[in-house]
Image (cartoon, rainbow, N blue to C red; front, side, top):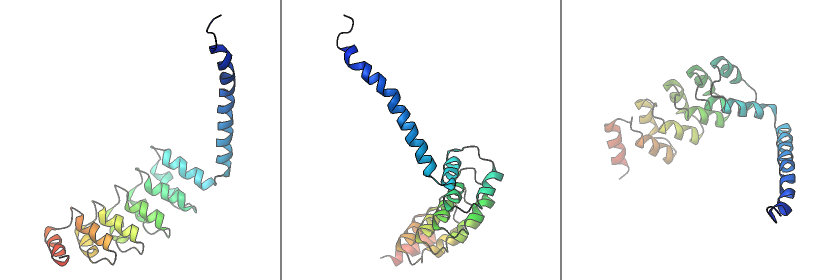
Length: 168
């Protein structure tokens, strides 16, 4: 008797493993069908490391905000597209622009005056935000935004010293 009990219990597990895998694949396909075309496109953009700038530029005008957010988050997004998306009506898209590591200073300047606190907070933390913009953000109505601007290393020392005096 080879293997004893090993063959009595394992055939069933071996039989059901492919079935379980197949059922999982079917469930994934059903979930994919439930997703909107825009959501599927956004997922493709997020997974693509080599998206072409012209393709990102086209997708930046997509009606689905999730797609535009994915474009703004893409590491290869061109600066002119980020500047365009900085004017997007959806705050999630503008947050993605403000958090992009290569966001151009012109877009950061625009986003520093945004109506959304989160967008302004991300702008205040961004290492490329111009010093004059950071100085203006020190008087932001949101305490968190002002604190983020004060903690930005690009803030001039004199402005940081004045901030520290006003906080005592």
